[in-house]
Amino acid sequence: MSGVSGSTPVNISVILPTLNRADSLREALERLKAQETGGRFTYEMIVVDNGSTDHTRRVVEALQPAFPVPLRYVYEAQRGRPCAVNAGMAMAGGGLFVFTDDDILTPPGWLAAMWTCFQEEHPDGIAGRVVPLWLASPPEWLGEGEMRKLGQIGCVDHGLERRSSRDGRYCRWVGGNLAISRAAVERIGPYDVCMTRTEDTEYFWRFMDRGLVVCYEPAAVVQHKVGAERMNPEYFRRWRHREGYYLAHLIPWKPFHLVTIMPLWRARVTLNVLAAWIRSVVTRQPWLTRFKAELLVRQEVSVWARRLQLWPQWWGAMFTGRRSMCEAGVAHGEAMRQEHIA
Image (spheres, one colour):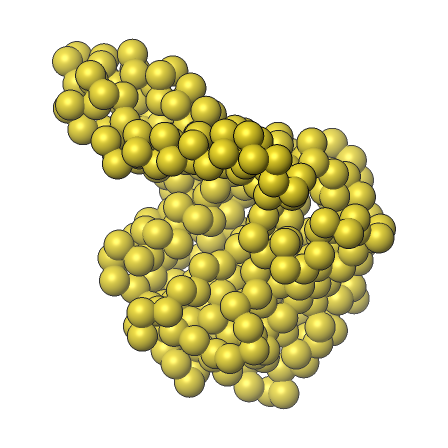
């Protein structure tokens, strides 16, 4: 992987995918131009427009002349965050790729905290801390404790202590606040373009499978805007359904799955989830307990439904040698990346 960032080399490439959030993007960029480097590192900004139909490009072009570091605009027509991230990485010139989103607000010391962790710990990746910025008053049932359990609003908080996966500690990241070294990306490849919902989770577990090291850096903290539309039960139900759809792609296919559809351990998980939900309803447990059990059932139903949809495709791949749709998508993503590089 190579990137062209102008005549001046940079240490960090900040990659920001965006889609039809021009005004929120402007606010994010205003924060990002105020990063304090202390002369210790240099950085560039790469905004990847993932097919926006609003005034996203005009926002970037208006900010470019006075932006204190290179601010680059990349247009990626193929929809999906993995496609946008891959396009940004292909254009990046830094040795450390730092990712954020158009609904993230960064403090002035954000990049400095990332760089300090990278220099002190020498990890392959860094997970930053993401706290909610409530744009409306959250309901009582969605306090920060429940938010961490339910997920789905793009936040992660492992506490105020730096931790490392090399010590066996959990350091899951989210796409709005993470960093990956160029060397790690060159080792494990681009994002999977099939994963348009759980792409960062899939990439994290690919890291773990390869034995790469992730550090959680609490000092690299950002705020994630959480709108009222993410604070109602229907949002969580839809999110869990989509989550199941993409989780189905993460489970490797084995020849005996032509009969069982899923690994046997997954069938046991489904039965346990279903039993827990039935028990919560029959015993009339509190609404939140029943709701959390219901979300897991919705996710499992979605996993099974998607696996059944994939079954004929896998059968064809096994016996005719055809590539699956997912493999074809990955190949297309890699071709797009090579085109960017060229």
